[in-house]
Picture 1 (cartoon, helix red, strand yellow):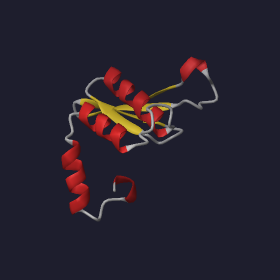
Picture 2 (cartoon, helix red, strand yellow):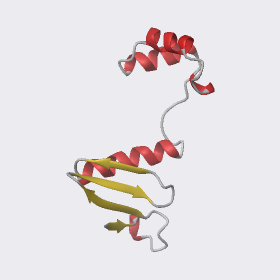
Picture 3 (cartoon, helix red, strand yellow):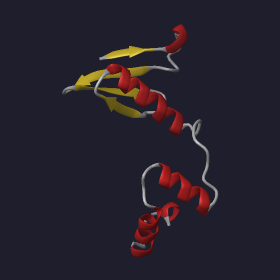
Length: 98
């Protein structure tokens, strides 16, 4: 297992832990507990950067209208009509997905 800090910060606020698991790498941000993986060390680090930013709310823009949601789903290759149908058919979805 390896660990590192950014910018030589010796108080370990930005400590990470990375280890090999099977054919890939697993990496955890110690402060947040966010853990990701990747096929390579570089991929695992990139995934961790994105996951921590999402966790801290530092990336992405909020979707504030049904039109914006529809556009975002279409950009992801998801059929918005299927999402709407699933919402109508499943009342067990969490409130934020209704």
